[in-house]
Each structure stands twice: as structure tokens, then as C-alpha cells.
Length: 232
Image (tube, helix red, strand yellow):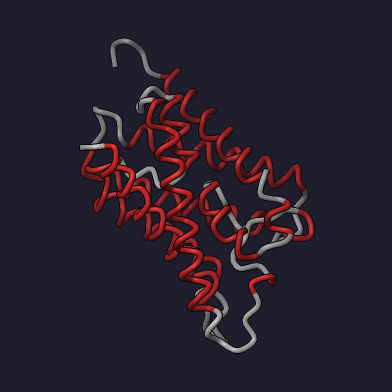
């Protein structure tokens, strides 16, 4: 498959992840009295990833996350020469999704993107008021296990037909844990798309949601790689 087609798949896949996941948070999480809440948002993120695993996994590998791409390079599963094109495509897809979501959300009277717009944050901008240290730790650990699961689920000895289920459900679990701490990033592209439209504190804190997920992804992939022996 050509790099152009793979990058196009990553763009569309990341669009769906951000539109579905962040869209559920912005439009449905607290919808008057019967919103879907944290659990619903977590499930939405998991479902978007699960569906895209089967839609584009055979085309691009369905990274749809710069931290995953960095991790798979570190884990020896992806060529470093394709890292930058993948990351650029993912970020563009996230920005496009955030733009469409903004267009929809702004159709309701009283909408104010500066109130949050599903952005990630720490300190006073953490949903639960968690500190920078707590946010950094959570994002590194959660992304590390995410890559560990991806590496295992897509290993040649694993049941490949169920990889998308394991990976999608892992993202759901990650959000159930992480939403109160940082609103859950584990994905720099997802954080960037909505931060651009939030426009203030989310941009100031965006550095953490690039640094921590990428570091965690690389660590998780390296740990999994170290566990494999030549016999595997």
C-alpha cells in the first residue's frame, strides 16, 4: 500500500476518533439530565478505535495517534522513515474533526469553546483538580500500557482477528481511569485538535499531552519488546 493511501487512512481514522470521542464529550456527556457521562464518553472513544481498527487496520495499521506511531517505531514494528508523514496526517485529521465539531456545537445558543471543548488539562483545568505530577504520571502509565496491549494484540502469535476488540476495549478502560485526571489524552493529535479551538489554557498546557503520551508509548513498546525472546 502506498504511503499516500496509508496517510489518508490515518487522517480519516483520526478524524473519526476525535469526532466520535470528543464529540460525545461536547455534545452528549451532560445532555440536559440524561447525558452519557464519563462512562459513555469512555465507551465512545473505545468504539471509534475499535471500528477503525477493522476499517483501516489493513491499510495503515490504524495508529491514529502519534504516541502509537512513536511507540511502534521504538518497538520495531514500524519504519522510522514513515513516522513524520503519519504524525502530520493524524494531526490534520484531528484538527479537521475539531473544526467540524466546533461548527456543530456552535449551533446551540450559549456554546463557549473556551469553557473546555473536551480539552485536556491539569491543575485547575483537570476535571478532578489533579496536579501536574499526577497528570504526567497518569498519561505516561496509561499510554505505556496502551502500547503494551497493542504490541501484544498484534503480535504474529496472537489471535489477530480479535486485536481490534482488545485495543478498542483497552482505550475504553484507559478513559474510565483517566478522564477525572486529565480528561484523558494518551493521544497528542486528539489533544491538539480541540486545544486549537479552546484557544487559551489548553494551548498553554498542550506540551504535556505531547511529551507524556509519546514517552509512555515508547516505554511501553520497549518493555514489551524486551520481554520477547529469540524463540518467540
